[in-house]
Image (cartoon, rainbow, N blue to C red; front, side):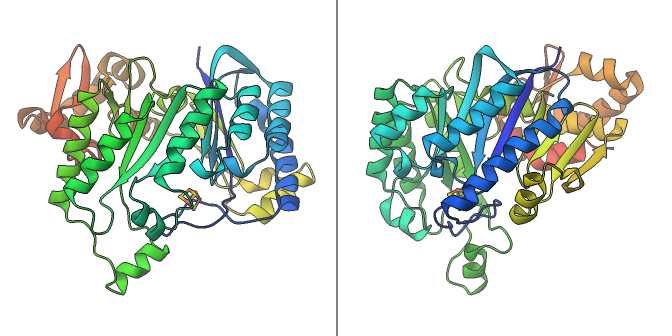
Length: 379
Ligand code: SF4
């Protein structure tokens, strides 16, 4: 039986960070109200994309979901529970910006089904946070954590970014020490990407910032792995670290074939046989789903066996558990398995891939070149 998850995209931010290309916009309360109505309508229209009316996880991401008031979030949960049953230990995550989490807001979140908060911290250097146009300070991260813990939400995750302009290895290590001193059970860390169309990318083109060189970026990744391990965090996915049994269940679902429905502009869905994605247009989305029509905004792609194979490779090899070769053979046949192992062989020989307990997985060395290896395993 497949686990099912629900993702809800909240495309609003109070201001834009200079590196971000996520689909989000700044807006007022009337736009938010109309949007929430549209999301609830989309739930009603598309709930049967998932074969089961039971959810193991809900993830409210963005954008900045913590711009929503408790009443607005409550409307969303009322609709969710109208159409689905949450399993008793369902993981229900809200992404939040530290400056939104006041003691009262934390209490209101705890009164909803939310039991996990993923906080966009990025850095503990206030000058860097200002440069990135983040709205919070390092102090607010601590205050937000205190508020959440006092309210009874103790499954806390943080996002960090490394390879920031002019960031030294020492500065990154200081960030890591501060991060792992927090009462968090999960951390995600990503190398800064200069996405086309962002203010940061324009600054690079104008010569105002320089991209971190690859060698320093790899050293930063290595110190991330070392500091996480020293604090007892398991490196369970290329960019994700968790204390035992605190792996993100919803995100892990993306890497293990979970079926999920994504609601809101630009949200993606997957149900084993097809992928769907919504048009990234807030205005069109709100208008269409406000009228309880809107399926024309959803694009569907039925997955060929080749695409299913690539999906399995791409997702499973990102994880510490790796690709289960028995499952792979069962789904795609012995011939496909032989071909895969032939392509994997040079990497097994140079020790960037390994086979252990019938699983193909990246080694420590392989983690540094994971993108190249995974793409070269495709036919
Ligand atoms: S708050 Fe998050 S989603 Fe919004 S602009 Fe900043 S990084 Fe992007």
